[in-house]
Image 1 (cartoon, rainbow, N blue to C red):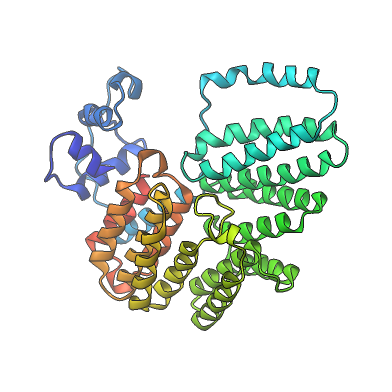
Image 2 (cartoon, rainbow, N blue to C red):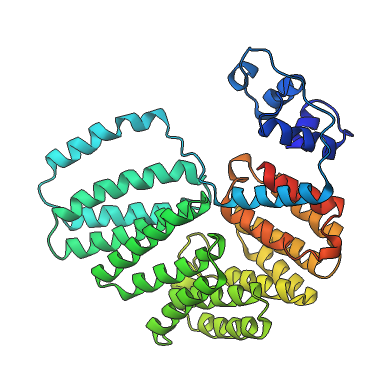
Length: 410
């Protein structure tokens, strides 16, 4: 934030650390950013009157000098709190018409048919292609509106249309859980994962049930749950699949490898990665060729997991190889996944002792994200995990402190 304000004010060589301290004062309500109001407005492309009242404000203080230890702890605390904070969900004005449309749907619907099931399967497919392209705050209200309508259709459906609609509901619930994770609302996400799994079981589609439970295990890595919780979820999926190659099984081994790596159990992480390779080799082409939806399991995902595992073990050569391979395979529109790989790269540099280069690379990656995705909890969790690899002796280096400040400001 400090860098953005300096650029907006035309001060390319301003003191970032000093301004960051003033921002902390403003956010605590100790002072009013009167002299920086125009810079805030320019940085966010908003009229100053929309940001600040016209009342008299107190000039920003320049004497705030907390102890280095308190400053570091505060930065880390704010970064962690930001990871679990729920982002506000803004609804376009057009959604004001939704209650009327939903009421009309309820009036004209007497019985749901296979034609409805066809329509809703297409709806879900479209969502799976959009999920990593549009901000969660945009998609989540749409998902919730569609869940409401689908609930009505299920209540008025008979077999076989009912089972198909329930299966679709399982996917919609899982996508809702996914977006809640992105927004940092891990508790509500966990409830939606439960609903998704139950709906999948009710539909009788074991493939859907496996996909959802495997995806839940992976997403738990970004939801602030303990590694133990992730491992339990992954093991349950592995046990339920009985070794049959599936997207769900691949996701489960992916989650197990990454959780083990975070715990420092590097042998277990490598073993899980080996199992993942074996499952991947047996996956159907439909899964391995799908590079655009969240249910696909193409080769770049394999390199993504390898990048994570080798980054945490400190094997820089293998980590770099996996990162380069993943970047080469990810489509250009998968910008969030590509950014995650670059955050891994920052972590591998940090892990091997090149702390300043790694921290600066991490800061650059986060700053280059579109503004609507900078608060993405999955991206922030990945960044914070990479920063956690900094050794205690390097934790107070300016580049590291700047990276923490960036995460806190977001």
